Image 1: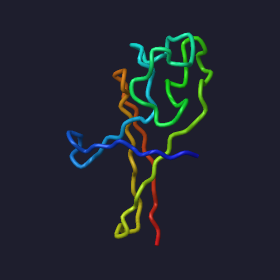
Image 2: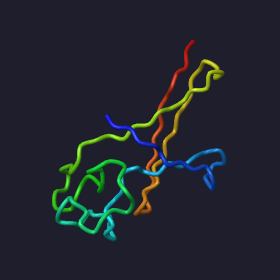
Image 3: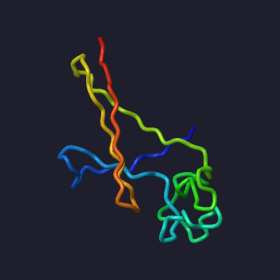
Image 4: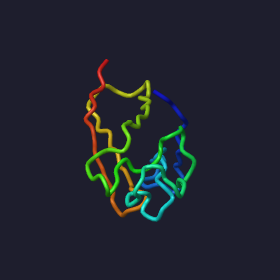
Length: 114
């Protein structure tokens, strides 16, 4: 496990009070982010400096559809306020794709108990 700082902002986000966190794994610098590249090395560079050596690309390529080109997960920490009342809550997650018009959303049920 390796940790590195998250790049976050709450300026200009919607709804007010929400925050945006950049995907820490850069795509390749080619116009399609490396998806159509013939190798996994990002020969044109990356869109920004990778947080750790070898962490770049989309994780899949057109030449090997369905076969992952890297095996890792991205995790984050959630701080639960100490004064939150016990009860049922919903945690929502939204992923705005950097290079396409896709938006992915999901949510999770959370039960806070004493």
